[in-house]
Amino acid sequence: MRGRKPKTTARARSLRQSDNDAEGKLWNELRDRRLNGHKFVRQLPIGPYFADFACREMRLVIEIDGSQHAGNRRDAVRDVFITGNGWSVARFWNVDVLRELSSVLETIVAICEGRLVERVEATDLRFFPAAGE
Image (cartoon, rainbow, N blue to C red; front, side, top):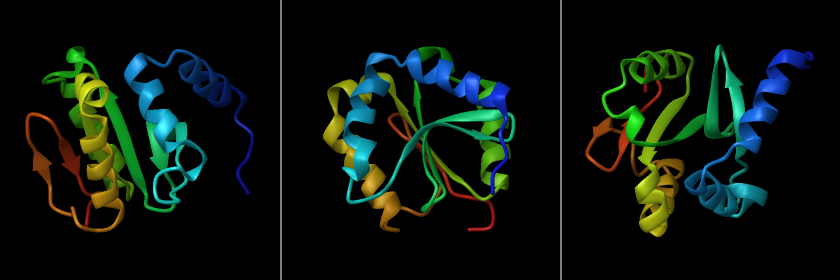
């Protein structure tokens, strides 16, 4: 059973309340098992980090990034930590969620169905499979 961590819970709640437009739009599609029955949660703590969205069953983290994340070294360190702990990470840009939501959702489905398993570093998607996969 998971123990209570009041500080972590408070931080996660705070992050959930400060969603940007892209996160809110994506959450509307992921919540309540709307995406092929997969259960996603918001602001899941993984070590010292909080995942924007996560599917525990698939051990998949979805991050929605703004322009401030372009070339961000801290994101690289974070991705190494998360993938090293058995989670895959998919990063999408805010603008792609807002303009190309169906493509973003199809990519997430492809990951969940095991059709996308190789590392991808493209302009519109960065996908890092869990270490050892």
